[in-house]
Image 1 (cartoon, protein in one colour):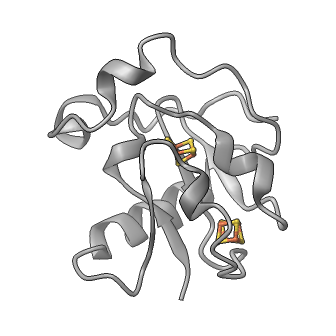
Image 2 (cartoon, helix red, strand yellow):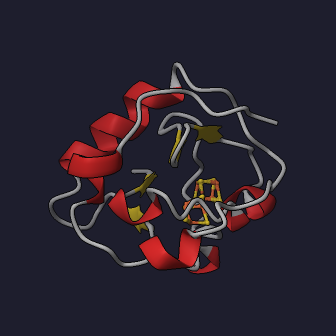
Length: 112
Ligand code: SF4
Ligand code: F3S
């Protein structure tokens, strides 16, 4: 199994998760992060750290799309290990629906 970052991360991108991951398996896109499924050791430490509740274990139902997205973009986005500045309007996007359809960006973030 692995943990995956889901839609709730888009435009929130709080990055508290990267501070606690023991194996540094987060990768940064312009608007969200993803977890590399082959590097994640399933420790679960990041899940309660996310203020947007965006991180789920892939044992939960209906996460296939997100598992695929995490796996694909972890290969092309840069690794991130240091928490940066979240978007100034992160709180406004917390819990909003349809973020993937309207705001997902395939562009990479800066990494760290
Ligand atoms: Fe990192 Fe553990 Fe979260 Fe996997 S479950 S991404 S290893 S903190
Ligand atoms: Fe995203 Fe939550 Fe991390 S909003 S960047 S998964 S702390």
